[in-house]
Amino acid sequence: MNKDLIKYVVVIQCEHSRERCSGFSCSNCFFERGAAFEGYPADTKFLTMTCGGCCGTRVAGYLEHFAKKMRMGTDIKKSEVAVHLASCVVTDNKHHDRCPNVDYMKEIIQKKGFENIVEGSFQSEPTRKLRAQGKYKVYENVAFD
Image (cartoon, rainbow, N blue to C red):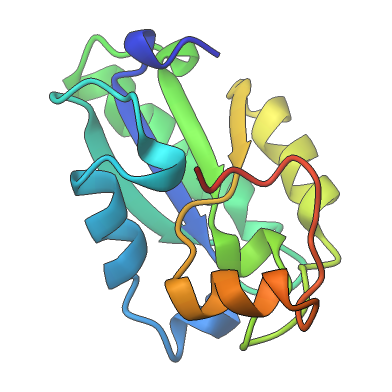
């Protein structure tokens, strides 16, 4: 994926984690262009949504609604959208282990025509240390830095 061509970033958060998390760190990380968001153009738009709860099937409806609004109000194409599965979805963390439905959600995202899928968003320094100590599992293909 060429980040220079991305005009919209969508972050999908875990519904259960969202009950305890405002999404501030992921949003702030995006606006500061840190970690997994490094390299996106300054004018890239940003949206967060949840998976809708287990097993993530609501992602289909949310992305369909997003695509409809995008078609009606912008000239942005699905190929110019990056969909990030937030760290609360794709990693072992203080809330829970990696979502068992990650691959299923990725299939849904692809079926809806979004091909730029990124696993990861933000990682706090305490969490980084716990991963380094082996207290949390480390998964390949998760973007933090």
